[in-house]
Image 1 (cartoon, rainbow, N blue to C red):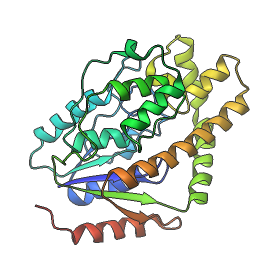
Image 2: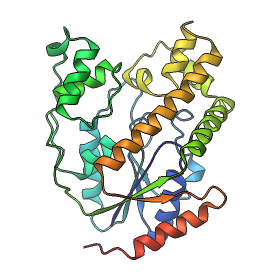
Image 3: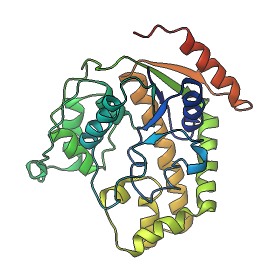
Image 4: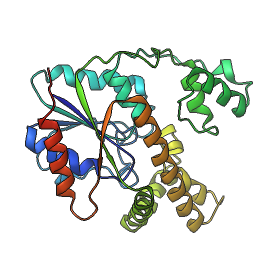
Length: 285
């Protein structure tokens, strides 16, 4: 059985995945593009060793932050893990929708990216081309590198067929409560040492793709560069996190067959019980 636990940032995916893994004796497979990188711990809310409760976790914290780990690499690595565990229940957890869809569906990616073909295009022109390729794509119009990767990637159509039988479980909550939770989460990250974590990479002059795109790090790099104040950087982290959550909702609602569950803010165990009850009623081949 393959279960995919999805939803926006900060909604409780990790907590649910641990509960489900314990119940179904499953392994957990990361599906977050930034949690693959070593050292990006606080800003990505990466699960701590003591929180794993002895459950095997895969594709977490194994790529050097200076490397460029793409959806192409993720698809290959994740499918190998599934192949290597044929009789094992597997729980996919994370908020990177493209990674999840590339893993579960018959998508084929080109390893080569020819960025020079688009060097004369403005960001606005690239964005229009991306929309023509897929009107549901969720790339920010200022993210030039990602738009070029999207345009040069050779993948299957949006109606690609699933390669595995799976159940997708989505966690959701009232938008106001989610945004308040995200803001509080960012404050906690700052308290836990996010600025020092980012500064350690900055002092080593590491300006890799991961650090240029990961929310929580790219904003602090602007602060270290003197582009903004610390307070402005923190506000921008909160703003970008809220916007990211909105894009995640859009992707999962349009791209995957997700069964959504409202998170109980007062008693998360009730949410877990509802999910487990729903799973028990599903017919898996």
